[in-house]
Image 1 (cartoon, rainbow over the protein chains, first blue to last red):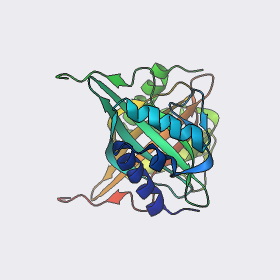
Image 2: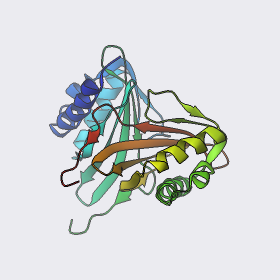
Image 3: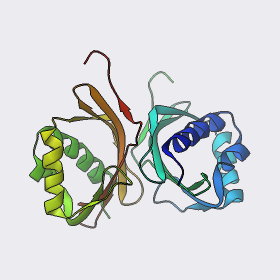
Length: 124
Length: 124
C-alpha cells in the first residue's frame, strides 16, 4: 500500500503539472485502467488515453488550480485535497479524493463539486 | 436522490451540532445502519448506537470543528467538506466525504486525515 507521504506528494505534483500545462505528465500519475469521475455523478473517464484527452481539454480552458491547505492522507490507500479552480470571472471550489494502487499510481479520482459550487469573483 | 442543497445543509448542520456538544443530534443525521470510517483505514464504526458513542467520546475531548470554505456537493449522492479539528495545542486538518441514502440521511462518512495531518499551533 502506498504510504501517506507518497500520496500527498502525488496530489501536490498533480496541481503543479496541471498548472504547468502538461496533460501527458498528469496522465502519467494514473494507472493504465484508471477512472476519473469529475465531477462525481457525471459519466466517468476511463483509461490512460481518455484521461490525457480529458486533461488536454481542461488545460486548454486556461483553468488554474490552487490547493486550499495541504493535501490530507489517511491510513489506507486514499488521500484528498481541497482546491480552487480559477478561470477569468469564474471560481470553482472543489475537493478531490484519489485512490492509489499498489504501484503508487492513481487508480481512481473523484472530484466533488456540484451545481452551486461556482462563484463569480468580484473584480474579474 | 438527495439534492445538493440538502447535502450541503447536512454538512453545515453536522459541524454546528458537533460544536454544540449534542452527540444524539449528530447521530440522528445518520441512517440506522450507517458506517463511519474516521480516519479512513481504521476500523469502522457501524450503526446508530455505536455512532452516538463515537461522537460522545469525540465531544468529551473538547475538540471544536471549523469548516474550511463551504461544503462541496456533487451530481450524485455524495458531498464533501474540508475542516479543522482543534484542541488546545493540537490542530487536525481533515476532509470528510458523506454518502447519503434515499431518505437524505448519511449512510457513510469517510474522514481523510493521516499520520502527519496534525499540527501544533504556536501560541497554545
